[in-house]
Image (cartoon, rainbow, N blue to C red; front, side, top):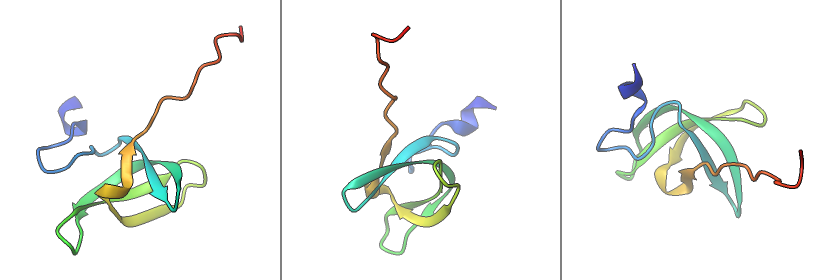
Length: 77
């Protein structure tokens, strides 16, 4: 069911959506596998990282952004 992958009014990111998480000043790609509410009334997410498969819980929404598409090198055929 496609509608289950859309964010609802409370959460900015949908289950299964690819995001990037800020850790220090770097961004790491991951997939939203669960959503909840953090202790400080912010929305939190459980993320499975793409690069190593690690899972992190209680990631605050303010440390996430939608994943950017990889750049395509137009000079390569």
